[in-house]
Image 1 (tube, rainbow, N blue to C red):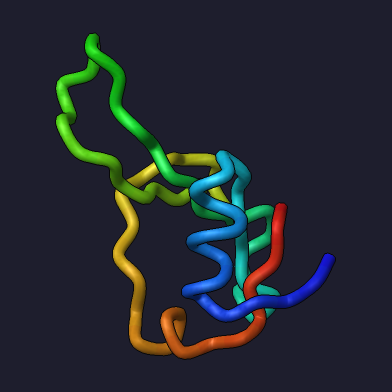
Image 2: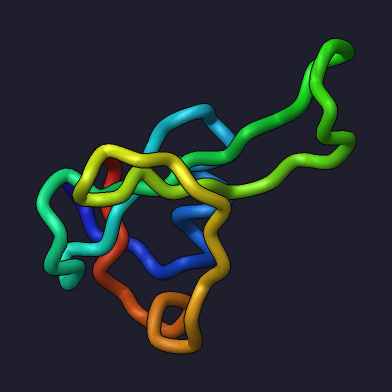
Length: 75
C-alpha cells in the first residue's frame, strides 16, 4: 500500500470507489468512503462517510490534520 496526501487519495482512491484510511488513525479497521447517491437516494450530492472502530457508518468531515497528512492509504 502506498501512502498519499489527501488530494491524491481523493482523486485516486475515493473517486475510484475504494475505501481509504490514515495510517495514523488509532481505531482498528476505520476507513472512509465516497457515497454517490442514486435516483432512489434521499441525498442529492456525493458525500464522504466513515466506518468507525465500533462498526457504525457516519458522515465524515476532514480535520486540518487529516487534510495535511501524507499517510493516506487504500483499505
